[in-house]
Image 1: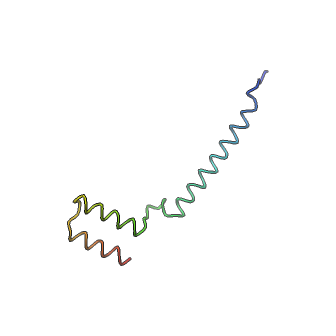
Image 2: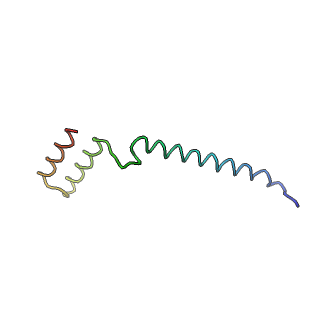
Image 3: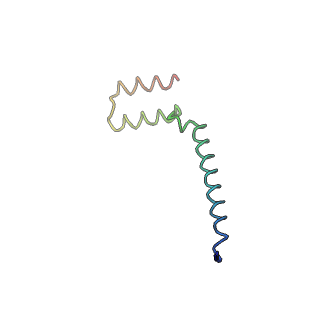
Length: 74
């Protein structure tokens, strides 16, 4: 059986796959640790979303003020 000059690339591909998996696990773990995986957002981001919804007209002024007050308290 002839392997040819491409024989060494099998090990290289395997190494690249293992490194990729390790990096993917690290990236996912950091996302969960920072709250990205749980769907939680920082209070600052919550206020930004509230401002955007008010600007688009999705909520009225009374609801905007009520929710903003609640977010600023927490």
